[in-house]
Amino acid sequence: LGTLYIVPTPIGNLADMTERAVTILQQVDLIAAEDTRHSRPLLQQYNVSTQVLSVHEHNESSRAGQLIERLKQGLNIALISDAGMPLISDPGYLIVRECRAEQIPVVALPGACAFVTALAGSGLATDKFMFEGFLPAKSAARKKAFANLADQTRSVVFYESPHRIESCLEDLAEILPTRDVVLARELSKQYETYLSGTATELLAQMHEDSNQKRGEMVLMIGGVEKEAVQEDQPSAEQQRAVTLLMQHLP
Ligand code: SAM
Image (cartoon, rainbow, N blue to C red; front, side, top):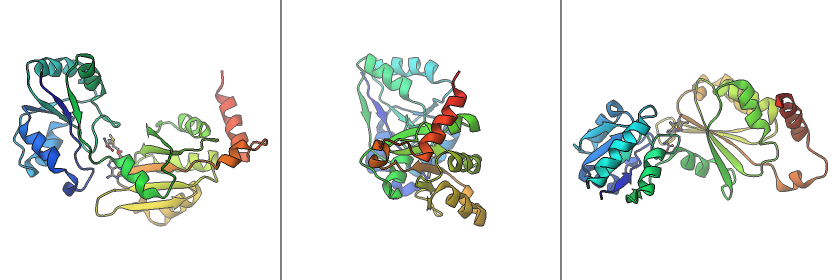
């Protein structure tokens, strides 16, 4: 049997590639990449000339079977995504699950991941947190997701698109107006920035400097204090959240 390697790539700064990641990519028989056009220049940068095959959202289930066949023939395969850790808001889960079911060895390499980097640099509590991937694109669903966090004591981490960040913060300002919010932008790149404050304060910072709406971003919401949750009286935020959730109930 071959081995499936899960290989993280940089999230912006090419120097964040590990030596081990480069060695594995050079040594495997095949690289399964999310977007081959995107990955080729990256691989060239690290002197990797291994054959590349595309595995994206839309062909992952059909590709999984083909990759499993090749692994069973003894080929070693590395899975990479466009940036960061494969499987984290990226394809790969179906293939890894199938490998585990078929007793095919899987080795995941440690490396760059946007949400871990963002949380570590945020100043929010890191002892307990939830990663929720991308927020819903529509405002009603997003508000509901925020309302569900009214008494969440853990830090919550989301990926968000620059096209939606303003409307997202407007929804957040309405549903959780007093919570600490941190927006980590362009991590590991030239214009890396962290904005922090309430959602309303972040919006004000964006209105002052429209560059703050651009680029790749991770949105984080601080948890509520435990004592606040244990109080008998629900907070104004919790009451608002309950009212909103009631509107969505059948
Ligand atoms: N697999 C990747 C990882 O390990 O983080 C995430 C892939 S997901 C499709 C892409 C999202 O990750 C972006 O929309 C953004 O929210 C976040 N992201 C990726 N690179 C980033 C960076 N350099 N700075 C901030 N956020 C980033």
